[in-house]
Image (cartoon, rainbow, N blue to C red; front, side):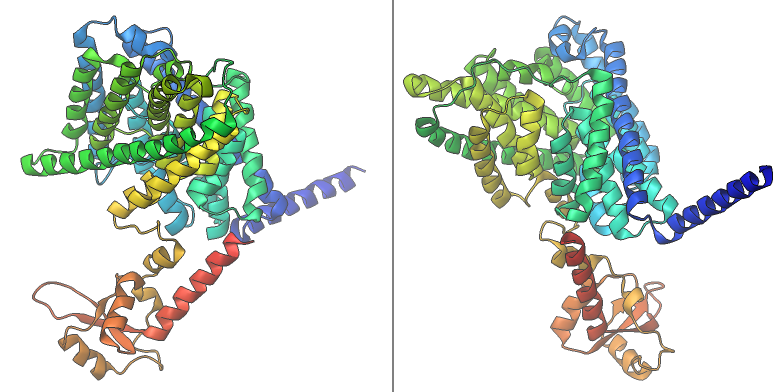
Length: 558
């Protein structure tokens, strides 16, 4: 009996070892993948919750307020030197961290996760990512005017990257696990399980493949459970009960609101990019180190907060006041302008954080200001002005994120109001249509375009950047490679491509020159002749590109 039991235990151990070896070398099976998705969902949900609690702890410590949801009301009674000093010290600490732990002095966020999904098999940087999470935590706790969704998305991506590297996941599995982690983090951060799942697919993976849907939903549900165990089943914002709409007569106003919100979203995005360009130019002209840029931004934020403490932090208090109609028209307008300025300073100063929460606040303020005008002009044909604030909140956020579906749902889940869906959908559709024509589809994709990462146009544009020439070329010892003398002649004519270049560089050279192959070289110095490494044939480049397109299409439609 004992020997039989011992034999069964040994067999179970062998099977477990065999299963782990299979998991590491050949990727997870369907059941294993769902189990991993659940574990990643729990881990990402816990990480997002810890990050939120950490912000609460540090903000309460430095400002001395008992509630971060009323931070600006409390800060209005603080001495001016505290309002100036806290963001300045926070910016200096952030600058020190990015100076020593990021190669480019830039805090990582959602755009880097999108890039990792598209170009790096669902992986993101770890060292710079950890530093960025700490920077965003300090920024959000010391007066930075951004949001927490960007940091939690990148933190979740680091978790999934570690798992993908551990099990040696291929590109499809790595991206799916990334989607699971992001969905759980968003769900745990905002108590929005439906929107969290759709955000991961619409914004990060940028497809709705059926094979990814179920595990992402499982992870999103796990993240939501973590949130509700910690904070309860409550919405972020409480709305008044009067959110009815006179559908037939009032809907045209929401079309116009959508157009306005689309333009407002573009203004905020371009303000951030302009501030980033001005900050870079200023930094280069004065030869300032990376560590001083966030500190200067902190000084500017602190000076603004002395007169307008509404800009401090995520801004949920002002957003709630807009959604409940507790602001006057001129207050909504002034706070909207100040929010754009504060977000531009924070992000242009490379302090960290996300743009989703600021876009919610800006949208609520814009919608309220528009609603007060619309209901004032046509009081007998209008619903509540707060409904316009709700629709505006979704419209600006959707235009900034380039995510009309998930943003519409996250607005509903943040407020708990499902009765005014048509008004929100109309405004969201118009705002995203307007903004997509004026930027590269979204804030994140425009950020990547500014770094010469071309994802906005789709896989037909960015897949060429994945393949290095040296991985596609034929080496000199290949019997089907090009003649060496012919290659040397072309090199003398300046017709060659570097081994470290990508097909994005090589294919236009084929189109321009009309040759069948290009010599591949390495450059060892300005005074040295190029060293021949092989030849890149046009047909090989096109085959690699077509295989990548076919694999992408298969993934997105499976």
